Image (tube, rainbow, N blue to C red; front, top):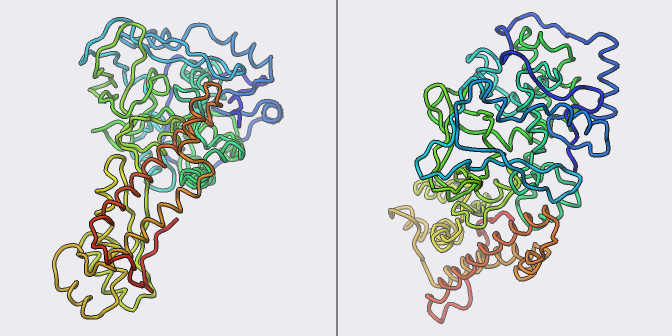
Length: 509
C-alpha cells in the first residue's frame, strides 16, 4: 500500500519556526474541544479528501503536490542542522535510487572523509533531537502517558503529525520533509509489511511473521483509540494547534502510516531518563543503515547524541549502525529489511503441558522447578538449533510420563527430566520431527525454489525481502530436523516403535 503525503496539495508541507516548541504547559483538569474555524475546517476536510495528512510521502498522482514539495526544498537537512547548532561533522547525505520510479530517491548518511574505528562521525545537540520530555515539556507527564496506555512511538507520531500541519511555521519542517522523502522505508527502500497490501502479505504465507504483522496492527489500532488521552490529560498542551482532537483530525490509516514512519527511525537511547529513551535523531535512521553484526550505535553524551564508528570507512561509503539483538522477523516488521548474516535470527516454538493430564499439577511443578512454565516459549537461534532441541527435550518428556512410580521418581530427582525409556525418547523425537515437518509444509515454496527466486535480479523488492525471510526460517527448521535425526541415531535399534502418549505436550503451530 502506498503511503499518502502528510500534507496534500491543500496544506503546505512541514515545518520551520525560530525555535523548537514543546507542547506548552502542564496537564490541566479542564477539558476543551478546540475546533478550527469553519473555513479552516472546510479546508482541512478538502485536504483529507485530496491528499490526507500523513507523515510520509506518497500521493504520486498529484503533480501539484510534487511542485509544492520541490518549492519547499530551500536547503537540505544537513544545512538546516548546521544553522541550528550541529557542530562540524564527518558525514554527508547522498542519494540512492528507488526501485519504484514513482518514488523519489532515498537519502543515506555516508562518510565525507576517510574514517577510522573510534572516530566521532557526528554529534547532534539535544536541541535538535525529538524526545518525549521535549515534546510534552514535562518529564512527569511524559512518563505518566507512556506507562499508562500510550507508547512513546504513538506520542511521537502524534506530535509530528500536528507539527506537520503547521507547515513551514514548524521548527521541525526540514526534518519532517526528510521523513516524507524516506516514506518510512529503510535503506533497501522497502516499507514495513504493516503497509503492504493483502496480496503482498501473501509473500509471507507459512511464516509466523504474518501473524505478527496482524498482531502489531491490532496494537496500533488500540493506540489510535487512546490518542485523545493525550489531549484530555493535558488540555493546555495543544493550544498552538488550531485543529480538532487527534481522532477527529487524523483518520486511522493516516496515523498508522505516521506510526510506521516513526517506528522506522526511532532510536532507543541507553542510560537516560524514561522520557528520553526513545528519540528521533536527524542524521539517524532511516538515513543510517542497520547491520546486525555492527557495534556502532547512537549514544547519549552530556547534552547531545553522538555516533562513533566501529570500523574504517572510505569517503562516500554508507555508514552502518547496530540495530540491537533483533531477529529478522522484527527487522522486517520494524525497518523493512532482512539481514542474511544476523546472528540473532531465531524462530519461536510454544509448547504447553496438557491440562487434561491427571498428573498436570505435578508436571507443572517439576517444570517450574527447572525454570519452565506450563506454557513455555522456546527460542531457536540460528546456528544453535541442536542446543535448542536439547533444551526442549526434558520439557516434552514430562508429557509422556504416565506411570505414577516414574512420576514420583522425577519429582524426587533434581534437575531436568532425563530419558526414562528408549521408546519414550523415540516418541518425543517423533513428535518434534512431525512438528518441524508440518511447519515446513505450511510454506507454499521449498527452500530451493526460494533460492531460485532470489537469483532473479528483477524480483519485486517486497517479495525479495519476504523470500529472504522465509528462506532463513526454513534453514533453521531444516537444521532442527537434522539435530533430531542426530539424537535419533543415538538411540538403540529396538526403539523403532514409540510409546503411546495420551497426554503429550502441545506444540503450537
